[in-house]
Length: 337
Image 1: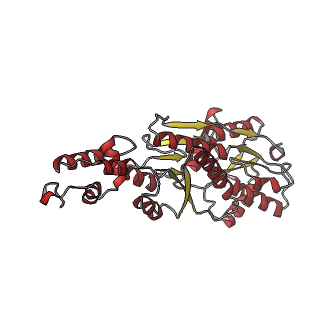
Image 2: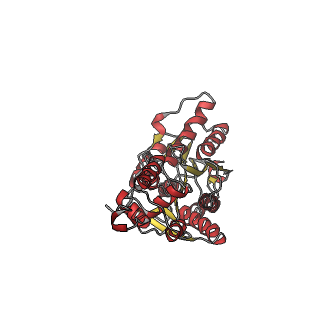
Image 3: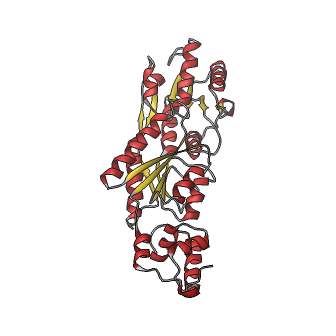
C-alpha cells in the first residue's frame, strides 16, 4: 500500500482509485461532491483519504475535474427492421442536443443485459454520462451505473425512483386507445403482446386492462395472448382470434401489428369489415398496407432530445426532475371504422 508518508512518496489519485477498486472519476466525484455517486461509495472514499492523509495536488485536481465531453447512448442489438425506427429516431434526438451543447455521442449496443461493453467504456474513462435506451425489471445496467457513481438517465420507467427517468405515458396512452375502441362498441378486444422484463410492455398491457376496469367490464382472458415471441406464434394466435370472432385486435407494438396484418391479408380477412386492428405504437412500417392503421403516435426524436438535455444538465450540476413524462396522440384511421 502506498502510504503518503512512506519514504516521502506522496499518494496520487490513481493510487486511491487502485486501492479502492474504483475509477478515478469516482474518487474525484467523492472529493468534489459533484455528480452522481452512491452514499456508501462516497463515504468509503472519504474515509480512505482521511485515513491516509491524502491531499490532491493541483494537477490531480485538474485531472479529477476533467471532462471527456462525451455521452453514451445504450441500446439493444436490433434484429428486425420494424424495431429499428424507434432507436434510430431516439439516437438522432440525443445526438442533436449533444452536438448543440458541445458533447459527442457514443452508441453502445448490448446483448440482453450483458454489461461487458458498458463496463469497458467506463473503465477506460471514455464518457461523462450515459443514457439507457430502454429499461428492464431488475435492470443490470442501472445497477452497474449506480455502483460506479456514473451519471445516467433512463428512457422509460423504472421501479427505482432514485433513477432519473424520461418516458412516454405508455399506460395512459394504451388506456385511452382501448377506451375509444370500447366506446365504439368493440367489447371483445383481443390483446396481442409479449410478457417479460421490458417495462414498456407491462405498461401497455396495464393500460388495456385499466380501460376495461374504468367501465366496470371484465377482460375476456381467452382473448389475451402474451406469448408472441416469434412471427409463427403471432400468425397462429391471429388465426385463433379470428375463429373466436373478436371485434378487434389490439397489438402491443408495430412489430406485432405488422405480423398480424400480414396474416390477416394472407387469410383474406377483410379489414375493418371482418376484423378491426389497432397498434399501441406507430411507425412507417404500418404505412405499407392498403388500409391505414389506428395507432398511438409518440415523438421518438423528442424523447431522445429531452433525455440528452436532462443528462447534460446533470453533468453541469443543475437540478433536474426525477421523472419527465411526454405526451402522445391517438390517431384514428380506417382499420377500426
